[in-house]
Image 1 (cartoon, rainbow, N blue to C red):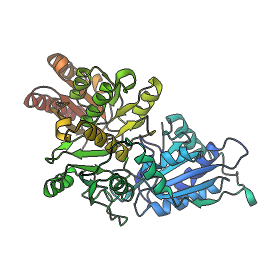
Image 2: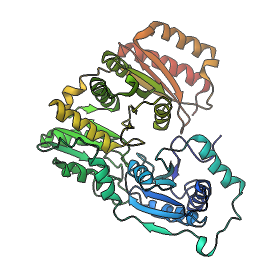
Image 3: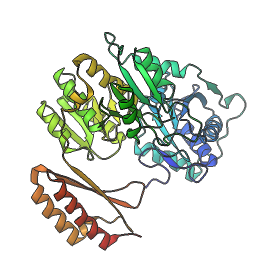
Image 4: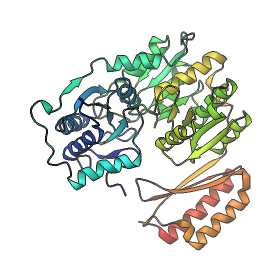
Length: 451
């Protein structure tokens, strides 16, 4: 069992264990030791979002890494996928992101990328933890010229802007398009507006004035209603909302209607199927994606493979089977032909390219998928017990599955970060599935409910 790392790095309230400067320095030392693989000079990239606590954690990580004889390349505030890209393009040994993504500003996190730009597998994270808690490297202290040095990469934003623009077809531009862009006062506040403006779009920016505490605060992908109102007010062509570290994106169409990750995957997958560029004719999604996505992709001649929740598991499946498109309902989209991890700005550019080529609006493109009604109920639990070992709960679930057959599904899973059981049902009749979800929730509450 992991002691520090969760589903996406180490995360928690900044300055409270495990997100303390002391632990950050230890994480830096362990990672530096692990990523050294020879006698040459080694380098690790460090980037962050705009949280106030990023400064203290950055300095602690730098101290830990340099104390193990590894150099640090500092890029400052930059989207998570930008750090992955710079890590691989500069041939660094690893990349570190200081961010808590869509969480409130008082939280922060630390996550790693390999030299190839991919998130670390569980076994590497466990090795980092072992080095920290076993104290195996406490006595390793390079001296004199063997101590690491920190360098600042002043043109990191420019490098990433150029990379993003190169993922957009050279024969196209965005001239004449009016786009509302919400950067969540986060890591993309410089990058995203620059990319869209340089491609010719008229950009109406929101959330581009970070102050250390306003990241994700009433803005960004968690609050699509903000760009919805702005799109209608400015009569824009669409709205694009990123989260704090810009690895996910949510859209609204020209009417202000939300277009989530499932719809975007349906749009991109069907376009790639039509152009014969979807590897294996397969899209990789998670178990949380709506069955409407499966139906849309199947209708276009493809199929959907499902993984556990988490973009890292989507990427693992893509790499294992050679697929090139995957994502999550929450807005993480991975285009492996371009980048190694979820990238909100890159995803937006792929959608904009489809709009430009087809001459269709976002609302017209989104019609490719009709979502099934979906109900999600959370139950607070006292213990995370296998619910199928509770006879009356198991019996109810099997009975509902028999009634749903191929026209719906039940997905029940525990939260990875909270004492919650998540009960999700999909089906043709929302009233019916809402009743069934409540029945399951009541039985769970009766058997293992928490206060």
